Length: 332
Ligand SMILES: Cc1cc2nc3c(=O)[nH]c(=O)nc-3n(C[C@H](O)[C@H](O)[C@H](O)COP(=O)(O)OP(=O)(O)OC[C@H]3O[C@@H](n4cnc5c(N)ncnc54)[C@H](O)[C@@H]3O)c2cc1C
Image (cartoon, rainbow, N blue to C red; front, side):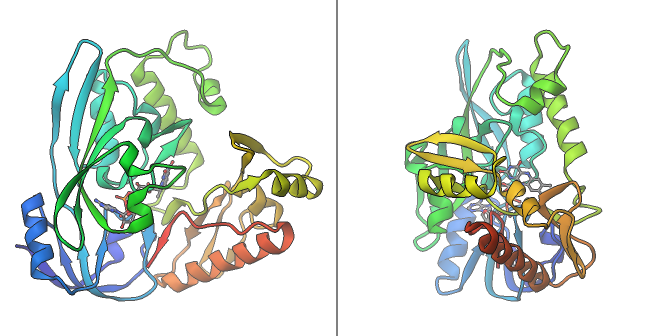
């Protein structure tokens, strides 16, 4: 079994912050993972995918488990649908590209989200009106304490906006994810930016939708190889009716989206911008000039600087608007 000692984590997180892990293991099969868990029962543990939604502020005195299970397999197929399993370590966008090339519909709106397949259920990744939960039917995962492998149905995953049982409990290591995709595709307007990008295309194909999303994302988001970042830093806040009404007194143009049950989602980017933090920089950290929800690293390897800047934004938004922004990014 491959266990490495005293590993520098800078290449393992897209913010490129420095920290040393005492142990790092990359199990390639579920059996290898169970054995690793048996060998290190008392070690503090942390699961790491491709590192696009985490950064480190200090060394980690324990075992980092980076699932390395690969493989994409069609489990069953009918005239209309296909059920596909993908290993946790498969690159998410390569998997999406594969499904689009095969003509399997359902994941195309999640094109170009960086990360691994194994992390996709954790925060129920989402973009352009689609969430991973819409297509996940099962998740295979090992219990961190017992090593026992369980199968979670979609309902058992407890999916919500950027949330799941895996995120809430930090108890399971996902080894593979099973998706149900459709063999037919009819483009439905779900998202205004996407419809604009596809203007003039009579009935967009799967590939045309994927390409449109890649074009929009490439224009909007900073390139993490040039400006290290972890995508959207904060979740969009959910407001009660009372909170929404109070906030509308201060911000008449507050963007709102009714999610039902008298709850309203608003834009974290809008609040950050109104608080005066769009493109604002503190030392080597700042918000991206074209997108205030993205914190970018201009040259520090110290995760604490990013965490301090995050707190400054949270405090300022809370003071001005009474909303405490919750990070979407994991800070270790
Ligand atoms: C430029 C950019 C754009 C982005 N755009 C989006 C977007 O549009 N929508 C969106 O939802 N996200 C977006 N993200 C965030 C990120 O892409 C997703 O969160 C992605 O799922 C992270 O995958 P990862 O493999 O890098 O996970 P990591 O960052 O390594 O881990 C994220 C969390 O998942 C846990 N985890 C990882 N793998 C496993 C596993 N196998 N089993 C159990 N737990 C695990 C980790 O412990 C950690 O808590 C963006 C990030 C960047 C840098």
